Image (tube, rainbow, N blue to C red):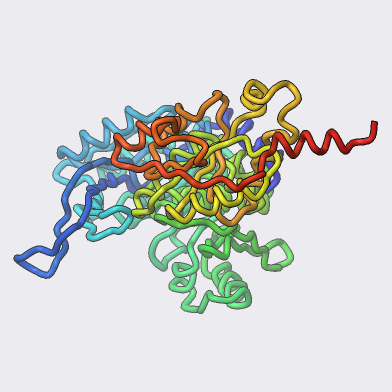
Length: 488
């Protein structure tokens, strides 16, 4: 997607007020490691090391909208239990979100607890109350939503079939939206889309569209037929279907199937990806983007969020960087924040991470050997690259010959390199201290105790390796020979 379009969407998003309403839940993650099977039953024993909680369902939609820069009012239902207090605290910790939580006495706040070993989910435990809302609670919910819609630019409805998205609420929202010309987008659940009324967009995934229409949705032709059928079965003005790795599809005004392709990603967790799509699609449309642009923006956002673990949100910086690096090799080039996040994802998968560094001004066989042997010692290799200013301080004012952008692209094109990260200092010590790789690789012109950051790596249980140099290979000497051979 064009970075200029992304920037325009993000700029206007800062001016939006968005109402997010629907089922609210807490997503709790209990993480640890598994090293044995229980002697009591044939089940893994999880050694717990961390528990964290985040807002889920409409809460995750609100988080995604707020991270994009809009002001959000999130409206949902909680019980009168300990989890309700936790939900209140989680809302208070979020910037740009005002929470209006309607209390249903005697009702349990929905909590989904996932037990995970690394990125592998072992078990999910749901605590929820499926009973319908009382008329009183429903009225409080409707009153809060309609009041907030008075000056809203967008309404997003998240239906997880937990009771908050009632027919009365839907009718009240669509009536108020019609009066105020406020766009309404909805993430559906179940097979009765007619009850959602004349919302602007309904966003099922391919499986949900298939269940709704009782038609297959594997091929483009099948998706088109299902969308045509779905249009006759509900009052939504447009139906957009998410298709996982295939991207998104919708019908244009001439009933042509529009396909917005997805980029290939390393997928770690699809939890909450639909929330990200609803949030990003909605804000893009509210900024004035057309459907193709909005869907492209949503594809970009959801592609980034599935690379994270658990329900998550994306930031404007991540979106802009992703839009600027559409080529696969450029996607290897990361700033230090991105690099740290990527390393954590690799670690969560149990991958061994290696690190080497240098100026790599003119790539030669010595560099190639260093990188090949470094990669042989790990699953993923990070290359720390001296910035232009850093190279000039180390090598003199005539260096580098190639700027850091060109040097990073050359490195990223190599099979053995998984990520490139530029650092500004003369040495990579700060970067190594932040990343703490499992193995640190340098040339044999150093001794083990001379390798910058070696003490950091070994103190954390990692190792330092030295690679033999290739005789006669030197960037400095190569540049000198070129200058001697240049015509006067």
